[in-house]
Length: 317
Image (cartoon, rainbow, N blue to C red; front, side):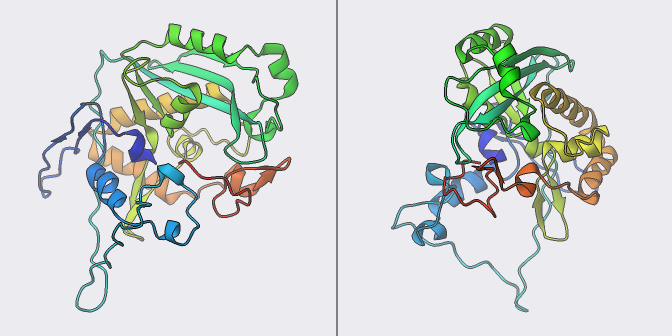
């Protein structure tokens, strides 16, 4: 999902070590930022048949990266060496952010409450906006127009009383967001495309582009020969020393952490040793289980854990 939200831009490679081959930039139609393997992952998969759809069990709907066309070809069998082993994949170079000091970077984060029992029935209840200097510019509580089934308080920190007391309408909240958000801003966040979707912001109108932190804090795992993705909590614990320890989330706190992680990455990206140290910290420390893993359901609401979901709703990320 991370590469999907970095869908417009340019592929940048970090400066190679002396013993590494150089890598040229690949330019896409609308320049912003993307990651290595973009075209291979987004184009190639869509032409290949989804095996789960053919079994009647795909739950990704239109967002599935594989084709639901009944005439689409099946994926070819993986290449193997003469001894039957798969060839080892090479680690991609770290993503290079083309940081521009004149660009207004903002992190944005949304907390949602449940409006039905399914995991994709959520409504915006808190919006935070943080500028590049890691200062909070907005922290708004939103009273949903829909009936709330659960405030998911252990996860969101939100309650009926807090929203009744501080909440404003979503329309009013979005007016305030658009007043503070420059139209040339680049938004930063973990799975930032989902926050943009919740707020119905339009790229190219309300802001210029997005940078998904998931692409910056992914790490090549030599044990499996693939990339391992990490969540915001794990990155904040490893890089900032700010462990969540199972506490409730807060949109403002998370938005500040997102900007701190982004700034830290930008400072470290040209220092190969420092970047390696950061990546090794992510990979070496155990990942704390998420709220959804510990609580497949809360107050009867499905929390969207793909391995334990029983509500049958599609997954969108």
